[in-house]
Length: 325
Ligand SMILES: [Zn+2]
Image (tube, rainbow, N blue to C red):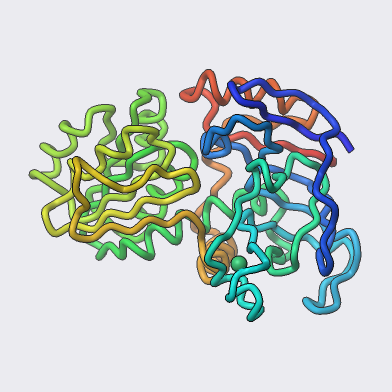
């Protein structure tokens, strides 16, 4: 089966890469839709990868253990339990100490077209969540995890560093939670415009502007790896007793100006309850994650889209790749 390969240096092509053989107990998922964004380019490696962490598809065969029929629609968690640590051997993969990540050299992502995964990576989708929403569910669950951990009170101010699709979803959730003000920071001016359109009170490329507007600091800062190196400037906006939450795969170590803030959390993966909360948010209709989508394309056109994602990060925020339609 043809897949998209992303090589070091951002070169991409359609190829038929050797994929890992299915392991015992794994189930096959035919991928329908993949959400691609700036986080899919992280972490940069010297080895080619099959990208795609936001994945929705259908089960190739029934799965009695979860009560799912063949063709049942699922999202696929890109967090891959190692299968060998104590937690995995106790059948508690959510507590795995050494999880891998899809879209890295060891684990193919959704642009493989077909994935074989352990059932604990499946997130069954209700009938009213289509494959586009299913593909965006991972990002939304990450945004939910960030806001739940930061736990802003309704009137507290939140600054979001990194205004790619994940940061924009965090911003929308902060708005829904009644936070005021909500600020956005990103090194790319086009992304700050997207943040204003998504409801930010103020967005800037210069953190100092927001520090001043926030009266010297805000109680909550959520930093997404989408901010790139600038994520390390997130502490500049944080009030002295504020909470900093960094979210997403590929984050640099959280050492800000040589020291850690009083309250700092690093969240590379959402947990099961964050996935459930994200599904509940979709069900009640108050949030539409497709608002962050700027492009829709096919598997054949995905390599050129990935090149644009790397070279024009201000223009391509989030692309949905439809593999079957
Ligand atoms: Zn493990």
